Image (cartoon, rainbow, N blue to C red; front, side):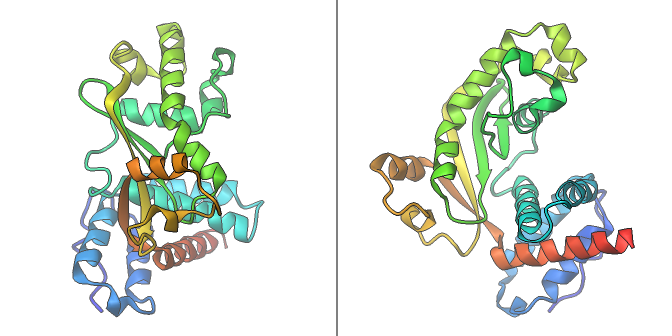
Length: 264
């Protein structure tokens, strides 16, 4: 078992005490000796790349879900943790989110923040966990991070991503630019005509380490998947995180313990 990541994680500009605690918890976890060096180095790199507001985001997530104590709170927090780790993983998201991409994701996940209900942009839209906008202003890939098997709802969500994004873009282009700016959407206004779906659009499905065995059928909770379901999943680009489900549980426990200490 190696030392805590001072000089590896802590020397970055994104240093947070919480990130150091997460690394220490991982290094002390049962069975850590079976994690190979390549996977550990990937984990370190991802922790280095976590955004500077990661600690604040985790705190907000715990507060928002505090009313749902127990399993509901843990599952939601674990999902948020994994989404952050996936966005920081250069093997899955090789470039940082552009302002346009982050804005698109924010509109889809929190439409109420932008007061665009009158424009037909509401909470019913299914959002990917991250989107990539290339230099041409095209959305060329999205990522969906899943910590467990896919049920029918998850399959429908993935199947609708492209249509949801196309609908959103078309609606945004019809809104007066000044109104978009007033709602903090300048990143969309800057390049309104170029924002579109790339003809090379792809969906990446990010999974914890160790749950994908090479067959998409193994990822399904659905008892009798259709040919369309299997074809869609086979067209997805499966990407494996270096963090296992056990690691995510460990990180979730660490964050909940950290938050409890801060509120005592």
